[in-house]
Image (cartoon, rainbow, N blue to C red; front, side, top):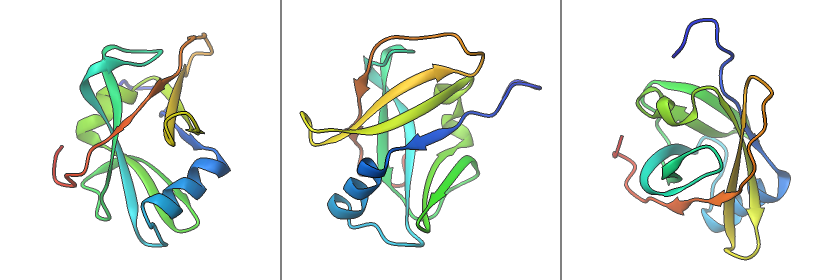
Length: 125
């Protein structure tokens, strides 16, 4: 992590939180990790897309947003993908799942929305 840089944030809409609870059957004390993966793109990355996995026991999280007792986090090994960016995670009806929009911490603008695919292995990264 760059020194003196603002820590990245995960902002989740109420609708995507509902989706996580219903589709992933999440309850208080459980969690979802977010990470970067090869292939695809986001409005802030070329050749990489955002991934997610159900994982209740984070390994060295550097971002941990708790909502209704559920932890949404990024582990230190995945911070490269989020560094300098805030992530807005919303529900996208067209894919029936999450979409990610990244905004730089320095206030500049980016302009595309990319969708994440689910990754089921909790132990990867």
